[in-house]
Length: 312
Image (cartoon, rainbow, N blue to C red; front, side, top):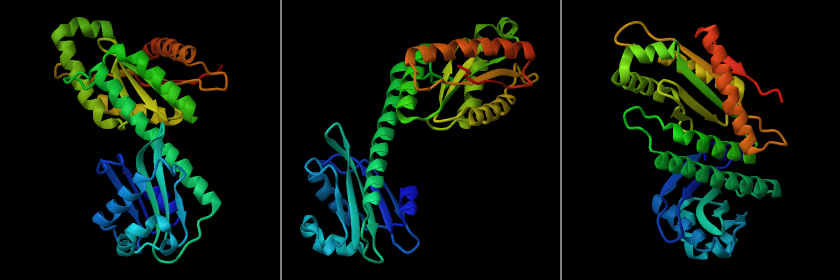
């Protein structure tokens, strides 16, 4: 809402997710320096009014003069309380159902909304719906896969499904996608010295150090007893490389049986999302490329991050 409100020089940009017959489950609002926050009861009445007509008016309402808008007749007092002079109201539609509402409000002076502004708001609304669905999908995948409460990591069984779903989403939205595979130096010797209980304790420490360094939508998976995969959605390879270096600095604080920190070998690569991209083939390419790259990283040591860019 902050970005939309500023970009369109609006007095307020108010957004909510919910259904027509229930109060919204999430509300966010941007207010310009010249505008005060919305009166909660008044703006919720507008939400109920527009959501009740959303399915019959999926393109929304562009209102240059709210005093002349028949759709607002029953909410005139609320519009006056909010100080709105011009408004754009856009229902968020997902599969023919209204799942939320965006309100763009001008309070200082009347405003004539241009066609390009109408198109831009509809485009933003579509992206909000997609982003909301993606967040729900990620939560569902994590819930079904079952994050380990001790490590905070998803199990190996979630790896393929996460990569496939993120690759499809990235392809559909023309967004980059990067993946990292990391593992301590000399993993076989480390497993032998730690034993099963020691390995689990070590991975718990890794998960505890890893989680605060990741963004909300980044996905961390336990790939093998000691290796971890991190999926970086909407992240190009150079930015993913910086994120992995941040992760490696955090993991450098993990101690093995109270001794010196263990160096982590890491390889990060991009997903080939070109015109001829096939999800299954592309994900298979990524999995194989990461394993080969990690082998090279082990040979070169943990001092350098190995970045593998798709050259096909």
